[in-house]
Image (cartoon, rainbow over all chains, first blue to last red; front, side):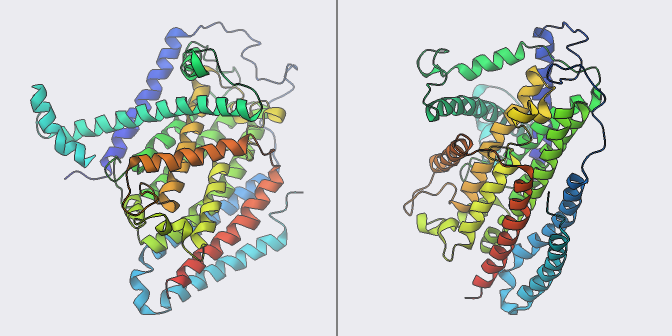
Length: 121
Length: 347
């Protein structure tokens, strides 16, 4: 029996092929008339001032960092959620373990909240 | 998929084609993949037309009326042909390899996610045992595509849009991922097939209506977070036409632009379908004993309609409001729902 994950590979190949084919088609049918103005970045009709890659507000990076931390923690919930009801005969063990985990998570969460990381102003 | 692989040898024999036995599953997979691709493209086209039509009526206009005679139902096809005939512009200052790569990533993520899409008991490509987890994982590819698109364009609007998209999509991925957990606790599985199967027996068995409504609340959270991850209004600030021109895809034109567009509409179907499968009983009908793909499609269509409705009703949020809602409202609520649902299991 073939692995149930094999269709993913086929889908990937087909989707990439589909996208490639569309782009080839548009290159065949589409016009190619490039001018300097057309190829310059769009700035609402104003002449280009400078490059776009400047320093950026640190807020965005902070949110990204928080996401990585919280998302890794969120992944630990999944196996727990799947087996939780099977192992319910063990009494409150599983729940208290998750409770401890969430408590640790919450300490961090309250810390960043109080530190004002989630404030945007 | 496996059903198709079982039927296929007979069909091939009737058609008089001889295919070596080992190739049959491969052929079945290719057929499935093509069907998914075609269905995705077609439904996105229909949805674009539906949204324009609905938007028109929400604003006391008619929407498209000319192309294809009545109701302008060929409008999307005409748009598609137009996009195909457009020039594919890559700005001189752009980072060319990344600029080309970005639309692929966006499309691939959504395409792959449809593999585990549970239309009905038999109509799904593969019943992965980690189905819902897989879908959430591949949907994340879109974030990479969007950020790359904005960065590689080397345009201020595009970069601003991409940064907003990053902050927003990333903030809402946490509540979205956690909102699934009450359902997983209840169904004891990540496979979409078993999650839907656990909700059989009429409307009152749907997870969204289970008292004390921990799953009902997580349905709302999932739907909201889904809207945000699709960058749909009221969370459309990565695109924000009135301030950022077109946000992260300002520099994209023609077919490459249409990839972003297609991914958004396919994503709407995907998120609505997932919400229908996880919380609204999937292919099960309102009364006990009713089931079929029609029910799933009806529920999905209704949720897609709600998305369109919201878009043409609500104004856009600001980035600080988006981050506030995601982190300070949805995340604590969803954590409470998960623990509450776990406590309920001791009853």
